[in-house]
Length: 338
Image (cartoon, rainbow, N blue to C red):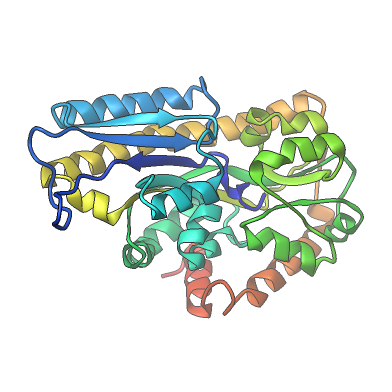
């Protein structure tokens, strides 16, 4: 999946900033309570929300109840573009976004969504470890602080119709997220026509057959019930959904230094619990899709064609989405190079 690449799991949280009238933001006063309003696309009642609530409890305890989080689940705050817009106008101050939302904030981060480079978690972890400082700097210059990386499963192509080679997508109606150019360009490379929809429009699009093919993780396909409208699932994954926890720099700077540390520590603790859970759940979800009747499609006979189309996509987006040096750095780190 491209990004839903991203997203699905996209979590977004918003912090109310503390300002002194007529002056620049400064550390919160000792008797003030900062509420972090967190919006997320995670469905209400999912077990991932238990982790978020545990995060909130740890944050409150570590700050003597001076900082707390309020959650808005189920996409009640909109799509990732809405999250970004609300952060920029001050209605929200932080988010956990997929590469789609990250790319709206800092376009070069879309390099993390290019096809054919990171297909396993070891590759993804190497890339993020190697380039963490580079991406941190990009976000800082855009007014945001990177608190933690996250991910949400392996991207697979699911379809209502049989496919095997990339050119088979030409006869289908594949979905591409409105704000995500990577998978859409891949479709152009293979001669297919992407149907641009927002994330919240996908299920209805599958119902009406406006679209019949989606790039998505197995765990997201089940959570969003998209799989009920589809019949085939690729055995090989296209990439990995990348996400990150971001907070507006002005909001972060307004926190007392000791509260900044607690926020960093509790975010890292939440990530350590979330990441193995989502990876394990996604692997199990893929098995579940097959057990539920979706037909597994082995793409290996046409792997050369898939790889060639992915390579062309990566090359053609150099200078338009990311620099050549950044792409090379990602490819080198993914391959295990220095």
